[in-house]
Image (cartoon, rainbow, N blue to C red; front, side, top):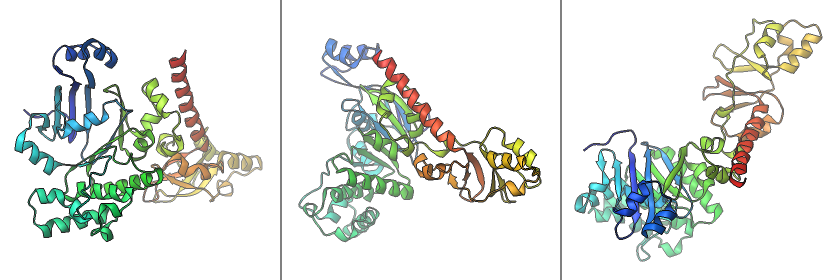
Length: 407
């Protein structure tokens, strides 16, 4: 049987119950809609996963986030069958992993996935290079080949000089880098990372997040990353899946999770997140509607409409000057009819992927910001007022959910 749908990894209607008879009455109670606590009370079984469905696209860093008991790690462990699902299918490409066993499962784990745990799980008596190459040794790869692969992986995490050191000689952050290098050494298409950075100090944790994103930019692995930290999820994830009591609550981009929380539970999580660190300029920029040098001042003001200003572009579409509504109206009151005297060149630029935090200083000037692409071509017009309006909208949305919860 082959899989339907898109995604390198796909969970379809996956349930996992813990207890002596998971496929009996407890399963039926779960499917009938009873809560996790009710299923436990009526059957003595614990609901680990409740009809979980999500897809991870090839080359995507997909984060599953939730508190303890939410099912996030359970979901990950069905992907390499460290846990048997009670019901449902877990596809990797066109293989239902849950149907694998014995040597076939072992080959799948070795060739398709690399796993990084919260606890480093390094062999204390083996050197760093031997720890990194251990998986290849199990695959009976020659020492010269596995050492070469291990050194390549160590270079990705900046630990080449420590190849001959032992784990006890490394800091916690360095040991976690060794764990990541070990997962990379066999060059698997999929990385499974279970709370990989949770045991690290905040500063080292942030550095590891940066390194993971840099490695991902280079290697384009498919990464399923588990965390209980929403800030971490929003910082590194291409998409984020939030779970509660074994069920999926919301899946979306970091911007969607923050700006359009689907439930009060999600809103409660995001209320303390720094919005400016997550929301992109593309969320609030307007279409550029540039003005032309052949326009009169009156025509250009009409083009501006109710916006704060508009940009004059060159033949390549790059912004060269700015007409603000204020400058234009002042020039008109002084009797000027030509566009040129009202234009200014002291404007700021940004890219659509920039976060609000990146443009706060520029927005503080109160002038429209030219949003450009990698070639410098104008693709958007950012009015500083839109930034504050969007942040206010999100805050009101979250407050609305809070009133629903506590009233």
